[in-house]
Image (cartoon, rainbow, N blue to C red; front, side, top):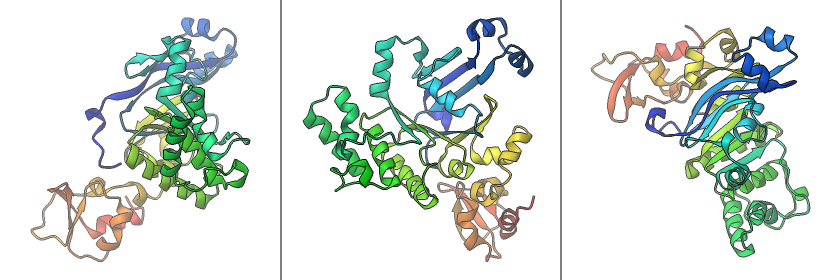
Length: 344
């Protein structure tokens, strides 16, 4: 994930431009008369601003995490992106095409062939086997049984469920059921993959296992992913970039490191305050200009502090920080200790 190109080197896969979702009486007319309503104007009109002027770009190959507390608007925003609910205003651009202008036929095509979805609740069909559940989206498309079962078998192998093709959902653990849901969503070979808190119902150990599995799959598939979570630990483990939402608004978008070092406001600062800095900060964030003539070793610029701490805290001599083969800085034991002790 860290080795992926910088965002400005990749095309935008999905973008939101001034997306609003307002619940209430005649929300479109209300918004037309109040293009940027305040909290007070919404409340006095009996309106609920579930998504408020959302703007974002998701790049090809990104794992883009949307997070916030319950009621922040993150799931509503994703449902606007997929048109599971209709936005009140704005544009949702998929490869430059506004899908809010798509007719029913185009929308069905988009959902069946371009988009995969995984939700917190596995929603497996209890009367179908693992193979039948995974192949089900292709059956809806009218794909022949031989072709859909071949594709389904490939996805079952990909998620590590070989040998369980004929099991029924009731015979599987929670983690195994979620793997079936993931395999089913991948069966249509989606161009963009939406996951709405897919692991939050799982026990902590299984959740960790599924996060590892998710990263393994992404290393193989290189999908463009929109991932919803309320867990910052999960976000920093998975995300290329993170959007933090509050009261329907996107407060800040950035890497975990950017959110921690340069929070946009007090809410983001509080949101990230409990996260151990060593899990987020990289060598590049705390390095200084290279001055030493001799180094004890080297680390890459994107290496997390927690991953390099063991060797640096016992070294009197600094390590050089490299970007590939180029030396870009140096890092000292004291700098690492300061992060580990959460000192400024």
